[in-house]
Amino acid sequence: MNERGFHHHQSDILVIGGGLSGCWAALTAARAGARVLLLEKGYCGTSGVAAPAGPGHWWVPPLPGAREDAVKARLDNAQGLGEARWMHRIMARTWQTLPDIGRHYQYEPDDSGRIRLNALRGPEYLRALRTYCLAVGVQILDHSPVFGLLRDKAGRVAGAHGAHVQGAHGPYRARAGSVILATGGCAFQSRLLGAANNTGDGHLMAAEAGAQFSGMEFSSIFSVVPRNTTMSRAMIYSFARYLDEAGQEIAPDAEGQSFLGLARALSRGWVLCDLSAAPETVRAQLPLISPNVMLPFRRQGIDPFRERFPIDLVGEGTIRGVGGIRLKGENWQTGVPGLYATGDVASRESVTGPISGGGAVNAAWALSSGCLAAEAALAEGHVSTGELEPFTDNEACSNGKNGSDSREKTIRKQIQAVMLDAPTQLSRNAGNLRAARNALENCHDSLTHSTPEGSWRQRQQRRETQALLAVARWCTASALERTETLGMHRREDAIAKASDVPAYHVISSGLEHVQSRREAVHT
Ligand SMILES: Cc1cc2nc3c(=O)[nH]c(=O)nc-3n(C[C@H](O)[C@H](O)[C@H](O)COP(=O)(O)OP(=O)(O)OC[C@H]3O[C@@H](n4cnc5c(N)ncnc54)[C@H](O)[C@@H]3O)c2cc1C
Image (cartoon, rainbow, N blue to C red; front, side, top):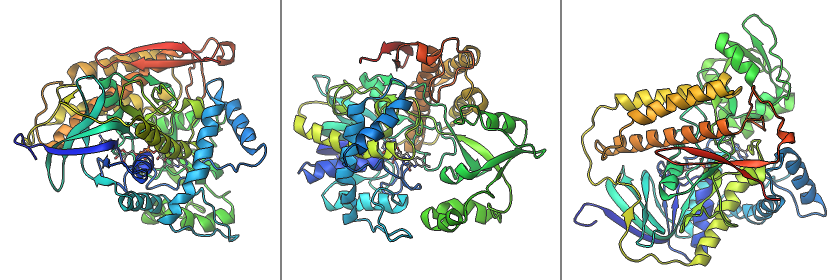
């Protein structure tokens, strides 16, 4: 700690975010002999969206033709946005590296006695990743939200600043040769399972350093949860039928992908879910494979396979959406010297196209992007020297008193009213998008950018509100820019068909003024 009350940390590689991707990045760098610091807003080992889930990974053996077939299937759905070589890279790295977790994770055989190396129980997987990180010498600082990035005199990202909000308590500066952002996607604090910390902080930091975004229009995806719960694990709903209050079945949407019919029915009243078609084997295995899925039912005294139960929809934003920081380079570089972006904070269009990578591709991307970015950062071998300064003037020096935060609470509610309104997000048009943009610009005008004050928690919350708003503005600007329906982005006022327009990415950027533009896909 120095005279200004800052804790100082130094490492070769700084990883921000200790979820699936951050842990793989940190342990890869540490195994290669680097000094690694991992800063986590919550508690590494329980936070991030994989911890309460059961992540399956894209898992294709290197048998003749197998990966080519898998890539072809994915490219067919990617509608011009996918890239075969990125898909091959993440499949190969996942196959090579994932079994390493067996050093700290207890695999269990399935009913046929087979070990499924690619399907892990989230809570134990993340606990094992933490144990693995510590075993190879990663320094983990929990409850230490990062507020912003630091740059050196040459403008290279060379660290981060934030506050330890538990234990050592107080502001910190962390210097590093390179920084890997692994702060996850943003679900606008819907009640998506495990996503409370996923407020877009990394997107905001990256934008302040000059990064851009791609594919932010692919952020309109919703999941079913039992009403008044956060249980958004999706597998069981593949057997579901939905009925309105009058007992009328709600027909699936034409393309069978979106929940627009459910969203519209929910805006009129209750929707009931019927799981009676779930096979006996699934019913028997569910409590073992996904123990937490049954908890909300048990608590409410519902047998979900015999009784119909009310449901709701929760927004997933960019988590099981697609968009994020635009990558510029082969190894998850962001175009900002010294800064890498991995996992859900980065755009995954190259491996998912405009449809979700949830279920297999996202976890493979999180793992392999973490490993490959860490190796690239190490190969760069940059050593940070000289004075550092923050990119913006939001660095916190001392803890203050709790002040009123009613204005921010109101702004958060306004952001959510725009981004989590399922009927309009699932059926976008120029009118509702312009109304969304105006509402968000009003929020931007009223959100204070003054020097931070208040307690650490309040400063953290202010940063989160700024981040939520920034992500919402990029998503909305990008959705306005793409005037056709493509993947999860549905424009009910589309004139052209996506297949009639040469494939392009929507690039968004800017904080004070948000911009969006099209960029043709290079073939
Ligand atoms: C319910 C559910 C089930 C899923 N199942 C699957 C599946 O079966 N297969 C699949 O491929 N994908 C699945 N996914 C997606 C997959 O879990 C994610 O792609 C993956 O977890 C992304 O990892 P990540 O490290 O990028 O982000 P996260 O796991 O979300 O981790 C981000 C971390 O950054 C931290 N953080 C955020 N801001 C800050 C800050 N300012 N300072 C410090 N730390 C910060 C957070 O606390 C968090 O720990 C699922 C997602 C959900 C929601």
